[in-house]
Amino acid sequence: TSRNCVLYGHNWTNCWRPVRIGNPGDTANGYDSDISSEAGTLEKETDVKVEVTNTLYVGSLSIAKELAGNDVDLTKDFNFTVTLKNDTVDLNRTYGGVTFSPVEEGNAHEVQGTVILKGGETETITDIPAGTTYEVVEDSYIAEGYVPTVVDGDAEATIDANEPASVTFRNTRNVGGL
Image (cartoon, rainbow, N blue to C red; front, side):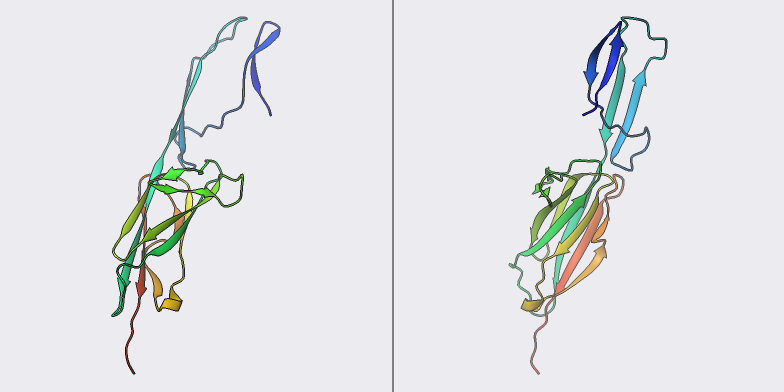
């Protein structure tokens, strides 16, 4: 791994690993960085202080389940797989009570979690880093007569710190005689 070091006299000291920081004012990847230091000439045996403050901006995703038709089961569980992707932020954690795990072992930048809802319920996943893309996929219940439709919001989009994301899935089930 590469390391950065400060030269004091003829000795390298105060070595550290590089840290990723964002560009001040640029929140596209979820982070905003504020860098403060004092300008001047570095004298031999002089300490230099640089302070970097990274702020992680977050947003939320709400998933809602609706049932329609003349033969629905309000006690039935419907499963949703939520995939999060972010090239710059480790996503392998729990957001708003939903635990996310890597899709591929060792890759914490693409993770999946499961949300289970009954008709009329909504789950909000909070504290997702801004700039993270998401995809929500509902398991198929067509064999049980439920016809799925996304009726509001986006099943695929990007989390924005200033605009909560949402998607509503409706399953319609009708039965009748000839």
